[in-house]
Length: 160
Image 1 (cartoon, rainbow, N blue to C red):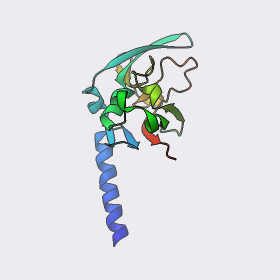
Image 2 (cartoon, helix red, strand yellow; image 1 turned 90 degrees about the vertical axis):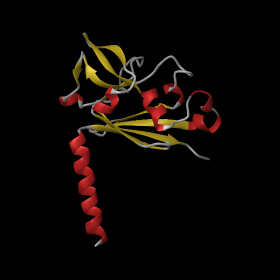
Image 3 (tube, helix red, strand yellow; image 1 turned 30 degrees about the vertical axis):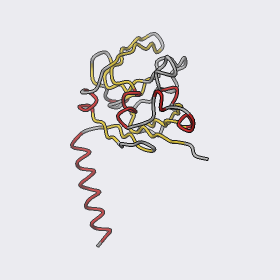
Image 4 (cartoon, rainbow, N blue to C red; image 1 turned 45 degrees about the horizontal axis):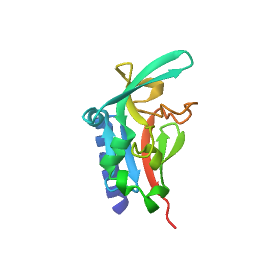
């Protein structure tokens, strides 16, 4: 009985997520877990960056990852000291690709570099092989920490 009830609720939850469309989940050591759809990202403060890949320049638009982490209640600014500095963010794509950022390197009060949760490229919604969302690290020289098909942002706080 319990298993059937759980399955029904899991199916209903999955159907609701599918109805909303693609989303990025923000989980882990956060005060507020988030599931951000394209519509929700569109209501947040917007930013754009230009990136050159090979000889093609693309303008990505979206929301700074710092703003997403702020909404999730991750320590930032003056709160980011001591044990809070031992945290990291794991960004994962639907294809299994994962990259890591320290929490401090995503905070604009610490560094002059930010990451962007992009939902458009050259004014058009991301789609196809890019996925609906892409994490862009514009100041990384090789661009290897850019995550296409972004589906999950997990905050991990190391403990001792």
